[in-house]
Image (cartoon, rainbow, N blue to C red; front, top):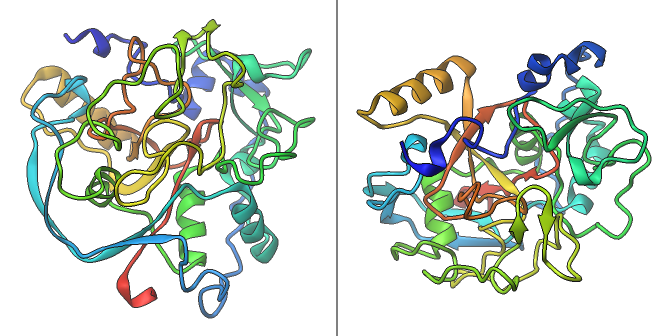
Length: 333
């Protein structure tokens, strides 16, 4: 078994049923009925032209890798696929943009309906009663945490308008994408865009590893996870969606900052017993694919900020490091 595949290290992304396993869900409210957005007759005209999208011509490209690091995730093999022309946002959807969606539609996120979401332990408000899943104890199920209150009821989005919206489930991401005339990207589209084209590169910037003592390329954990952070004067957590240099195609933060939802169900192509078991779990739990890693990833723990890296979670999963970006078809230009 690969050193990154150990139980409990499979991903830094918790599931809602992890809270139930810890006994924490017992004190959480039952989810209310979903509130569907009041869909406009046509896409919102402020977004219809997609001025922040990067467009790709499509054609043959490669996804995956022949040098997988976390084999049980199904990172390989490298394989050739054909893409239709598509567009994709330069950066993750911001708090400002998500707030416009909520104001226009009255949409309530899964975190709001459930009444709680996962917050990294260092961000939890002092004195707030929380529970920690046994498998990922650095996460706390926090009542009232949601996109508008990322750390809990007393927190706000002040100073974070251009940070990525977080505590976003796949259901929420898909609803937003439909509202603005787009959709979620496929995993193949996401990888192609993150590389800036068909080039075989490990990261959006190339193959150089991020330095341990300098945030030169992306927003990931620095230090010993989850207790020691040595990032200096840069507070760990999300950063602006346009922080750090873009990749050759002009996309920002495809490595680190926040996990990003994709359209695809999460499936494992593997002949190994571990891979087959992980695939059965993904099918049973109706998991969908997440890409890019987050500000909590580190090479020693969750080495998933590589382009070929991937994970999966059920569509109602939300946490303080999970967001999305939108893809578009040419007809919506």
